[in-house]
Image (cartoon, rainbow, N blue to C red; front, side, top):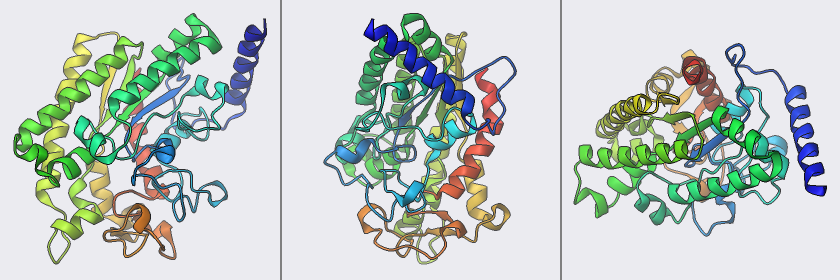
Length: 354
């Protein structure tokens, strides 16, 4: 009886929150709904899962989060919200997407979605191993735990309905190319860029099919952004002028083309699904090359430190106005930049999930 009461209470609280929450910024097609958002991936979308890990890939300390609610560092790799938060905000579900490993996570939070992403993770298992973070395979295991908890709260039928209609987002790959492939000899000795991209795409394909097997139907997989234009890569590989690094951008584009083709093939294999390749290469590249067009002043370095190389613990001081910057540190964007990108990306791709 107590469990039944808790289920009803949890559902009513969640339903109330959905009614009271701000209207979606991005319109969802008529007669359609997105009950929850579930996110997997790396630091671009991590909302705090790394906080309890013994890894250098965590940022639960200032100045990270200086523009978050109350200036609180939460483990988000930015000055404020990250794309996982902005997606649920844009579609009108809730204001933040909590980390699954957040010790304050409440059962009712599970109904509208959680985040399994881990900063430093990648498609290549070696990438997560080197960074000592949560691999994609472990993220999938945590998702299975989540499904069992969700069923306890809402019952089998509602659980299946939530999974079938929720938005599943996968964002990773950058660490694989920059850190594992080009920064170590561990993969470069055995793979050229094309065959390594194939390895990553096979991992992405396997992960997406596993999600499908667990009940997911609306799955969006983000491509890799123009990583050759990250401030850190300009500094390390861009020469005296700190130019964008062509071979890194070309590796990203090669992976993206292979990923898009694989997702299209999977969509044909599973016709009751919507498997969507999300382009995050071209728009960010335009923002970087034409920052004034988007309301920014500086796009070749980050706000923290010198902006050229600092990330995580090296970010000991910041610029005077992070709203002028596309990048927060030498790897990650500011909330302002993420917000613009997420809005335009959803405006372009959301209808593909229905």
